[in-house]
Amino acid sequence: MNTPSLDLIGSAEAARILEVDRSTFLRWAAAGKITPAVAGNGRTGEKFFNRSDVEALAAERDSPASKRVAS
Image 1 (cartoon, helix red, strand yellow):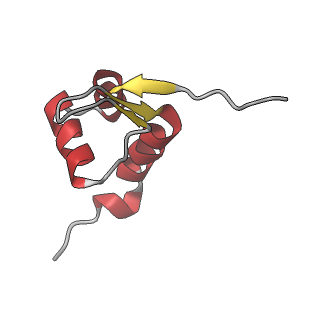
Image 2 (cartoon, helix red, strand yellow):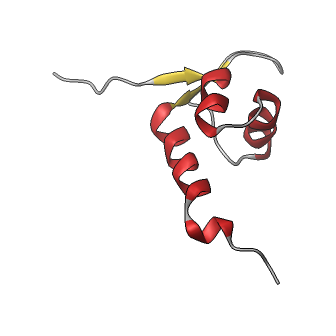
Image 3 (cartoon, rainbow, N blue to C red):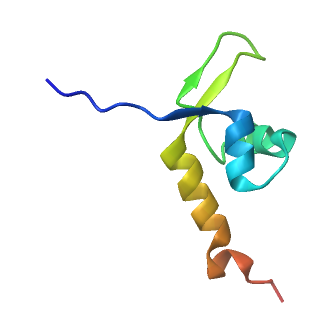
């Protein structure tokens, strides 16, 4: 039986991929812009994210539609 392996990364690696500060990334996670795949206990528990989710968010941020300026 094959089980898919998860490619989990921490918030520091996710922030690097997204080219934002780690604090910005953690605010996005708190706001629900991205959901942790695994979260530790407590308010400050470690959080790990699926690399594919982070890369999808990066691609979304790089898309031409996200760069449109409201008039």
